[in-house]
Image (cartoon, rainbow, N blue to C red; front, side, top):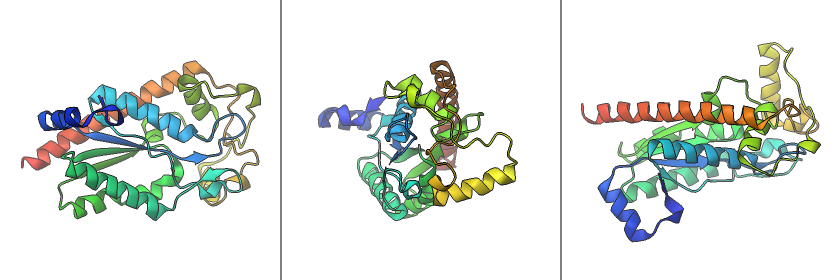
Length: 244
């Protein structure tokens, strides 16, 4: 793994020249996560996941883009940028990476509200670079079996495994969907994407009260293992296409 922000210019250029490495850009958000988790939660988790995947796959690790699309959390605290802004920032970062001879890029997303801004990004970058840049985009919660939440059991467990910022004494149940049908959950999800506080008054989706470090470590290992495997599969597929 090469942590890009910690490198010195001559060393970094030498590494790039010697080895064709892929780069990872973690993308998070700054938004409310109930009364017990910090507003940096999404950025903290995706940073740790990206770091571990980079270590496993020997990638370049870029600094986390900590601002995302979180307007749906208002009037709870959020620092948000528009979808088009997030898309444009990532396009320019990827084009800049390419100008430094890094043309394979993984974007790891850590916030649900960013997904719309990311859905057509790889095609746009591929077109702008005339098929020189390959961008693969993944939201990390798709790489675990357990149903995901917001400041609930899963996210709180993940934070307990990586951070000392959690205040479990403040943790309270939020919206519980256990006995709801898939259709009801889907409708609530659509409503939450427009106004999160309208579905949960304390900003929590799930129950964080039983979260543990042990569960967080288990989830983290599962996500990193599956993401690393998928990343290697993408690299193999890309190599095959380039050599046809």
